[in-house]
Length: 120
Length: 253
Image 1 (cartoon, rainbow over the protein chains, first blue to last red):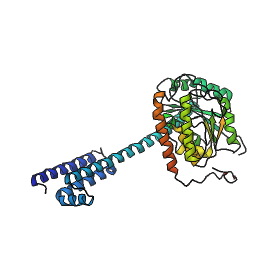
Image 2: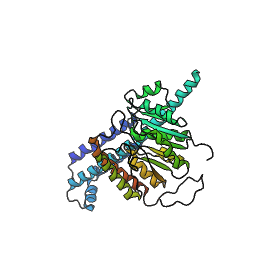
Image 3: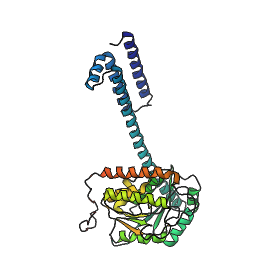
Image 4: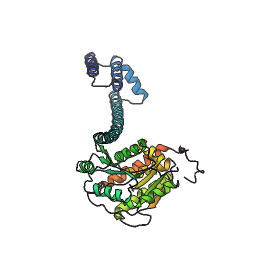
């Protein structure tokens, strides 16, 4: 069972976490689309702090004996998933930049040609 | 088709200030009937200034995107301006423009969709180093393994494609070392790929984009790329979408 003070610390930490996300959202430093994942993560953390027995149950289902180990495994797994999604976002943006550059170059040529005929 | 097909010669150039003027002038001399388009791939040397001064037709990519991105820009251009055939020629003078008509001929006659200029068919001209040929043979064998087609010069960037593949390549073209992957894509799109013998020269100036140090990375990257590219098409092969010209049943693949 988690001691009361630790539980209080964790709750404050999660609240800070939510405030930070909301602050970033307000500043438009985060897209709501990508923030949903982080919000869901926060909700999950909150639930686990309030009902820690749930975590123990889930961990047992997966056959992990040690509670802390289970927590770390889930935490790392979650982070890897987020990293993977970030890489895929970066690749997609890469593709979009490429298309933009190509289209820009074609427009640039068109402008040059139009300027040439204009000055004649 | 009736009238003469419109041909666009795509000349990607990254830091080719030493070669580009010569290559383009030679091209205009030997094959003035074809349009050409130099693609300056964000060069840091004098390439864009030379293009402007010489009044070449050129695209100026503001970011260096690598050969794949540059060539794809050419295909997008060709598609936009409705060219019938697009030919890729390296901007470093390795590819002999004199062979252009040989590349175009099988497409003109409707015999092939993609024509690759191969330096290994008649083993003439510059043959590349022994180690590099070995690498090319390995990739060639790999492509044969995954597609069932034997292409000798899989790294050749001297290539002509018809309208169908202008569209395909403008939509999706491999990036870093694109040639072998582009061949797999061509075969998997049920393109009729043909190799014709050409003579290549050793580079006229500048340095090759693939240094010896990079060749290990190159082999790993390209091997993976070919496998992934092949996987992307699955077991089922697509249907040809070009129904403009009625044609007999596909023979083989």
